[in-house]
Image (tube, rainbow, N blue to C red):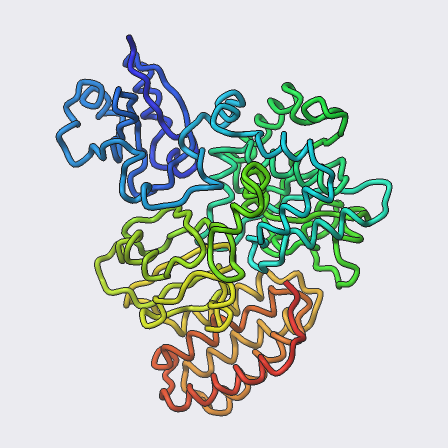
Length: 526
């Protein structure tokens, strides 16, 4: 009997030769199965061989290793990681949204169903829409895109809105540096997203849905489109969802790579065929969204948590996490880190456990100097802040944000001043240009930081930088300009020497920035 071997087909594994390994295994007579990556990216290509004890993994496999792998010559080497499900890096996680990623073939609907898939949708179809929304509200599920807005409130607003057509839109324009969970879930278990969006439609009365997926993700685009075709063929989508008589149609729209389209109203503009540009709010998308109709806009991780919420009940999901941050978050470890990949854990896990425990410190072996959490507009945090629990409120109190769960690690060779400058430069390049604080403020920010680092009138330029950051925070139409001061402020607070600034001078400047930024509830709208 031919051995059954699993080789990941997602972009991370393919980028390091997984397709060549798969071809070599098939040529050697193995029965090949293609899965998503388990998320242990430092081991890719991670090939799994089915045995009586479970699926045994082999790390960093190359085509030339195939004969040794199939012949058992790798079993007693460090390349063999044992039964993958028992690997400490995986066994210590609490996988909810990622429960099936890497376990089944991505577009095998029968396997998805056998592993608990569609249970949430089937239950949702037995409930009134208001009861479905109540389950989501009771679960405490909040938007995983960064703002942390309660999903149930958004859904209820759409449900009670009056309109001839309603939409569900998934923002999969995953543009933050160091984030890849959306891509990995779509490439490894797309039916979870399809099911979550269909439940959202059932709950709110929507009949049409779109996934806005970035063009830089060709593997995800192909996999999701295939999954949608399979869902239609088996009655999960279409005129009568699972025979219920309720219609829901779903399609994929490919974005052109604009970072600003991660903001919900810019995404809607792009979906409507226009330039990605932020809309002023109100009206909010839940009332006037796509084509002026009530629209649910959530990101991939939010919608992918919904099937579990409905299958097990809102109370079961609310039992996970801490404080007002309920459930799990999919954290992504990237940058200069020894063990990069995906860690799904309950909210409340410490940043230290992620960076030092799961991440294993830096890949370079040098001391960790900083981590940036929440994408390119997130704060830089030093090791002294690593005991922060990963939850929305704790991070907000520390002047930081959890965002999409990206954690980028830097060793002690990092130049914090250069990274602060990069934040302003990034904003200048990616701004939609609609509001002056973001469009002009970021350009001036680069110039001011350059003068500070060059030693030109440092004290007066620090005051100017303070004023600029306050203006951007309070005056920008969206979080693009409103959050750009966060990495700048944190870099100056913790590493003033990288700006050529004395600590006492930096403390005075950052204290003034913080006081000004928190003196009003106005400002950027996520």
